[in-house]
Image (cartoon, rainbow, N blue to C red; front, top):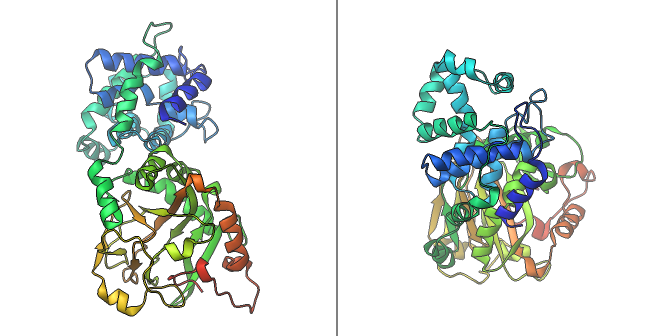
Length: 437
C-alpha cells in the first residue's frame, strides 16, 4: 500500500481516540502541531515531524503501555515505522527526538516542568525523567537539536479543543516529496547494474539496530525446535550459534524493515520490477566464527524457475576486515554462473583471477547485491560479533515461494535442534559456502 494512503488510513481509523488524557483527539493533536509548524515557516521535514510525531501511539496500540497513557517508547517505534515507509532520515530523527526534547527542557527549567500537562507529567517517568548532564551535552551536540526543540514546542501547543486547522490531505504533497527523496538515484541504479552491488551508508538510523538485536537475542535464547531455524558451527570451545533463518513472523521490527515500502522500493528499482521476499537469515559471525567460501548465490536459488534475485545485507554491527566483513569481486555486468566445485563454491582458478574488495559497514548501512556477484567473507579474528541480516528478493511476477523454500530446507537440512542423532546432512543447495555442518 502506498505510504501516504497507509498513513491516512491509520489516522482515519485510529485518530479519533483520546490523546492520552488531553482535551483533543490524536488526529486533532497531530493536525494542530503541523499547523503550528507550517505557520512558523518551519522546514518541510519539521512540519512532517510535527504532523507524525505521535504516530507510534496509533501504529502500536497493543505495545507496552505507560500506565494507560499511550505506548511506551512510541517515539522510537514511530520513527522506525516512518523510516520503513520511506521517510527521510531527518523526519524520522525529529520524531524520535521529540521525547528527548521534553526530557532536556525538564532538566533545564522547573518552569517548563511545572507547565507540563498532567498526562505529560505521568509519561515523563516512563520516558526516563529529566536528562542527566551527560545526556544534555550529547543532545546539544545532536545536529537535530534545535529543530527537535521546536517540534516539541509545537507539540505542547497542539492541545486546543475544536481548533480549526487543515486536514491530513493538506500535507500529501509534502509527504510524497519526502518519500521520493529517499528513492535510489539514477547514478546509484547505474552503479548497481555495472558492479552488481550498491552500498547505502546510513540507510537506517543506527539506533534502530537495538530493536533488531533484541528480537534476535530473544530467538537465540529459546532452546529447542521453533518456527524459526537456528544453525550452529564448530568453534574452539565446541558449538556456537552461526545463523538464524525463517524469522520474519517472530521479529516484527525486522519484518517492518525487510517488507516495508522503503526496502521494497529499492528492491524494485534494482530488479526493474516489483519484488517479493524469497528468504531471510541473520549471520551472527561471533568471535572466532568461520568465514564463508567464495561463491555466487544464483546456483543455490535455482529451485522454482525464478529468473533473478537480489540480496540486501543490513549491517547490525560494525563490519571490517578483522571481524570478517563481506568481500565482493570487482566484476562488471556479471550475469553468468562462473566455474564451480562440486559443492557450488567457486574454483581456485576463478578466485585467483578475481580482484576482491572488502565492504566495511557501520550499523544501519545496507549493501544490495546481485545473485551473480561473487562474494565471500573471512574468519572473525576479533573479540566482537559481526551480526548482519541477509534478505533475498525475487520478482513478484514469478510467485511467492518463501514458505516452500523453507519447507524444503527444513526437510533436507534441518536446524540442529530438529536433527536425528547419527544422521549426516549434506544440505546441497541449502548449505553453499558456509561453515554450518
